[in-house]
Length: 173
Length: 207
Image (tube, rainbow over all chains, first blue to last red; front, side, top):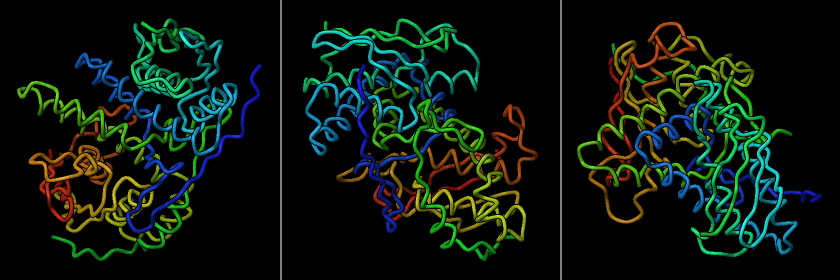
C-alpha cells in the first residue's frame, strides 16, 4: 500500500495580469459543462486522440516539473504525487493497481469527467474520459522519464457506462 | 439608452476579495461549487486543444468548430454564472453593492470573471437588454500566439461567457435545462490581442 506524499501546492496570483498560477503553471477554473462539451466536440470531430494527446503533453510536463522541483525521486513518491495532483485539481480519485515499466492498471473511484457528463446528460454507451487517459499516459511518461507517446491507455470500465469504477489498462506498443 | 459605465459595484474591492480564491479537490478528488463540478487545469491544455482542432479541421468546418468551442463556454457561463451570482461568496462580497438590477450584477460578474483569472475584462458599453461591449486587456486565450499576429481571433471562451452573462441578465428566468434563456444573445469578437490589437473586444447582441 503506497503512503501518499504531502503534495506541495503553491498558488500565486499575478494582480497585474489577473492570472492564477498553480505550481508555476497558469491555471484556470472551468466547470463540468465545459469539460463535457469539449469532450463531446472531440467525439463528434473524431479527435478524441487529439484531446487525450494534449492532456498527455500537458500533464507529463506538469508532473515532470513537479518531480524536478520537489526532488521526487522514488517510484512510490512519484506515483503518490501523481495521484494526489489528479485529486487536487479536481479530476477525481485515482489509485494505481500496479505500475511497471511496460504496463500498468489504474482505477478511478471518482472521475470529474464521468460525473460531470452524467450530471449533464446521464449515462453514455462508450468511455468519455479522454482527458483522464491522456493524464495517465503523461503520468507514466513522467514517472519513468520516457518520451511522450511511449504508453497507450485503454479505458476498460467506465463510470459513465454504469460501472462502479473506471479502469484503465496501460501498455507499450 | 447607452449607460456611461458608471456602476454601483466597487470593482477593485470585488477583485481584491475574490482573487483570494484557492480551491482544491475534496476527499473524492472532486471540487463542487456553484451547482457544478469544477476543475483547475493548466490553461495551455484548453488553449492547445482548441487551437490545434481549429487549425486541423477542413476549412469548410472551421466556423462550425469555432461555434462549438464558443458554445462550450456559453453553456458553462450560463450555468456556472448563475451559480456564482447566487452563491454565498457573491452574497457576501458583491450583492451589498448591487443597486441597479441587472446592470450592477453584470458589472459585478465581470469583476469576478477578472478576479478568477479568465480575462482581465470590463464592460465598456451597455445598452440594457440589447447590446454589450466588453474589452479584455489580458486573457489566456491570447497566449496561442507568441510571435507575430493571427488573422483569426481565438477567444472562444470569452465570447461564450459574454453571451451567457447577457442571457442571465436579459434572457428571462434562469432555466437549469438550458432550453429557454440560453442562446438569447450571441457574441462576436471584433479585436484580439492575438491579432495584434491592444485588447480583445467582444460585442454581444440579441441572437
